[in-house]
Amino acid sequence: MAADSALQLIAFGGWLDILRSWVITTGVIALVAYPVGVYLGTTRLEHYRTKTKLIEQSLADSLTGLRNRASLPIDYDAGPESDRLIILLSLDRFKVVNERHGHVIGDRVLIRSARLIAEELANLGNIYRTDGTEFTVLATGHTVADAKAQVLALLARFESTNFGTLEKPVCLTASAGIADVPSATTFTMAFAAVDAALETAKATGRSRVCLASEPATPGIVEGDEVIWSSDLSPHHGRASHP
Image (cartoon, rainbow, N blue to C red; front, side, top):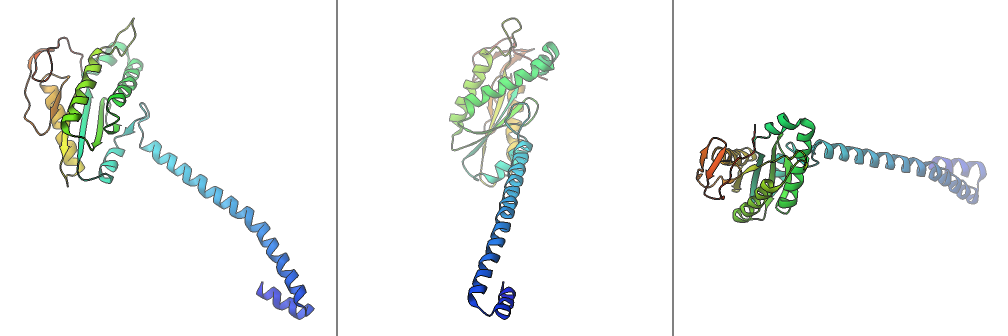
């Protein structure tokens, strides 16, 4: 515009002509720049939205819609370093469900199990499907006692729920471990602790909750039947797990 003004001053020798030229030039620039700016802005916004959607999809479990295993350590590291619990749940002997009813029914059972877990434990924190038949809850702001009470209620619902149909019922139980996470505990250490608690729950009878901070109180197990356990009433004929 400065060069144009200089040329106008030389050619026409009048400020009115220069001012008119400025107005015309500015108008042309505005007419060109506005749609270009809108296009570039819209393109960048769409790119951002697409990128965000792809990231969200990469962190979601395609079957259940829960967050997946990859997102768990990310959320763990981004969360508070105190007042945290990890709850690890596993469906007991789920392999038998696939063998008896097929993988299509097995997937439906997994979806319904995920919904059941969300109904009972969503208030505790984020829920993840971290393995084929394992689900994890990253809880904050809750005591171990409160979390255990809610998990026990969830396990009771599992035992009383028909995951199939009236014609083809599917019975299922689940086991759980709970770990209180001290400050400065790495994700690997925390998950190893809760995984050990879950393994104890399965090894001592299934359909029960074990705490990483307490020694296990074994049930009396005969074959597939638990005759007695310290924190659950007697149960018989439990469902199977791989």
